[in-house]
Amino acid sequence: MKNVKKTIIFSLIFLAATVTFFFFWGRMDQPKKTNITSTQLENENKIIARINGHVIYEKQLTPVLKMESKKFKKFSSNNLSKETILNIRKRALDKIISTELLYQEGMKLRNEDIEKKIDRQIDAMNKKNTRELKKINKERIREIAKRNVYIDEYLSRNDLINPKVSEKKIRALYESGKKKYIAPEKVKVKHVLIKIDKNDKPEEIKKARKKIEEARNAILSGKSFGEIVNKYSQCDSVKGEGDLGFIKRGFMPSEFDEVAFSIKPGELSEIIRTNFGFHVLKVLNKEPARQIPYDQLKKFFSKYLQKKESKIQINEHIKTLRQKADIEILL
Image (cartoon, rainbow, N blue to C red; front, side):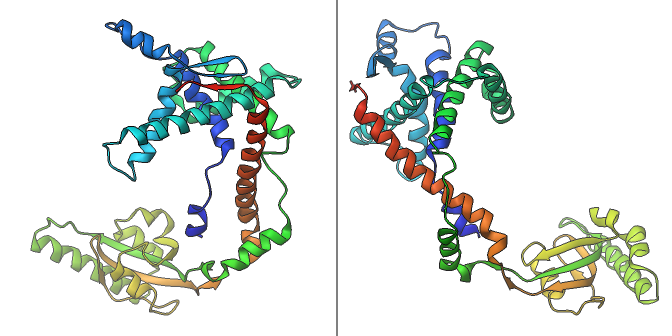
């Protein structure tokens, strides 16, 4: 499952929602510079592209360029060549052009209740970008939201956001990786914990050991596990009478796992020492490793394929828009 999730491709739907944000932020919310030179001002106001008559300035490219450069530097040196920087600039401008074309097309549509949609968009933006939005005034935030609404509306009306995916394709994707879709073995346990710290002195460790022995002996003598948990345990699981629920290997320390996955349900363990302290555990139930059925993964795979198909379709759609558009690049 992890491998599948990692393969989900970045979609231009996300581009439409996020690049617009940085695009306008870069244009309208550059910090005020007290000692800006005439050369710097000239560079910022340099026209780098025209899209159907709409002008794009150098300062609009800067925020997108920073994002692209950060992604590149994760996999390369911080010392980028002139050629690499130029390629990054071209990619950043290409994203701005794609977004602008979608926005221009969206503006041609009749869009009812536009103000309400913009309000909802602002609410969504506030939930995701609270810190960033504090740097921008309300009028500018509304303009950003407006662009997002028109772009989303255009993508939706052209069936580019959630294209239909056939059952056959979904099933084929599941079958192609069926061996990987295994739910690991799990065990449901409850425990008593007496904590120890790595800096504890030997006598403190002895006291902790004595307490866990008392707790275990009390359970063996017939006391209920819950009662002993409440009396002795120093774990947050006290609220649930020591119940940790179903755990997979690796959730707890290896010493704990070794015992938990080896004893039978209903059996009380010997005393176990981990980096947390001393434990006594009882296994309540076990679930063996199993194949995850298709029905449980169908929705996930459907969304994955929708995103993948959406990216392809949006890219093709933008190619068509670019062919029809009057684009002048001045990098």
